[in-house]
Image (cartoon, rainbow, N blue to C red; front, side):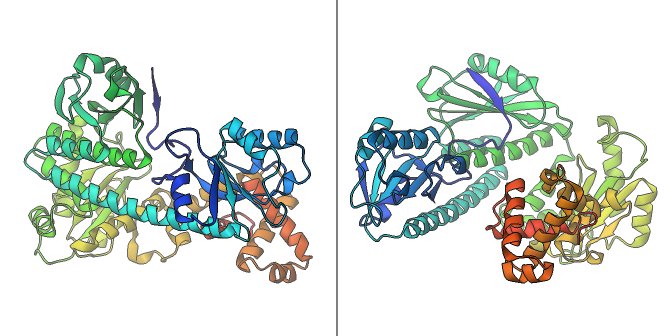
Length: 530
């Protein structure tokens, strides 16, 4: 059986890289939490979050995977049959475990609760008397943060090892060896003809067995993933990724197999490896232009590209000028009305690339889907910008930076690229106000605002305007109900009701500072908003 899914699809009940389990949380709080009913499987169930609710039916507010804490208010005076119904609702909603506080509502577990949980396979945990539920939540949040930090550091180290492998004498084979070790799987690299060109980790399938999966991979287009299962013990989960050229031409496939499904962290590592393999395969197919393209990718996307001295050498050999002088990142997009297709046809790409190299006096030029990106020591004077515009380009020019700041310079210019077509003119980083709204620009800002506040479009105009005005006032008052009430001249309860209504319509958590910041920025681009 096989199926396809886009890269980055969620895996399992937990999101992101980290998967904490119930036994790990219990081990951190041995005195406060007592396991009454254990989990059914050998492995402890994963936890998405710790939630607290005294509602008779909290399931509409749950996502699944929660450790639900309750003082038993919904079970006070209930019969065993009603307790059974309550437990059935929780298990149907995907709750991982139930934590029951025996104080102050109950002196002991309600009659039938332990038996109902056992029948449903729901782990039951008794929370010690006078133990605040917030202590459990804070402990879980601290564990989640620590695990996220650990995983992030691990992924950085993994990326460095893969980059070093790419810079070795046998880049593809070395990269596969690192990948197989990191994700604990066997790995196969094939060409466009389906023949295996490199492998690592003792593959459980041969070329003939992989051929149906490869046909499905080649049948699609763009970034995608094909998943299949086989009878072999080490092929319970087989994942195939296409390796494509910039024109979406099939260059080969990367296939990985393991006995169990890959974790989100492993999928992240695999995605990085796919990108590096595509660079290597494109390098081989493009010919003598490949070294500069690979150098460009590493310089702009790698934290550690085989040592700073190697990066400096690559930069000095590819960009004209004295070695210690600063460089700039420049990105360009075709202007409206520019003649010819973009990306250019394969036979025209070399001419376009050489022309851009000449204009910027550098070999670090890359043709991209949006236009081009280059690293140059040229100051990019106004006459060069005018020349590029005459040739049908709009460019975003970065500030001068030294080699360590090159990646940050690239990110600055990338943030401005969306403004080029919207404004119809070239821009320089130094001339753009350093603010989120300034970097977004009016067109991108309106797009963000339209999508973010789309759930309000069905409301009558005056109602929508009133809700937006209340939200703007409340956010500007840093969530102070009384200050917002005084500014709008309405009762604080009305302010609270309007803000909560907006949150429900937009399906956002206004307790999250990042959400509040996004809303406040987006409000600046709402037509007619205060």
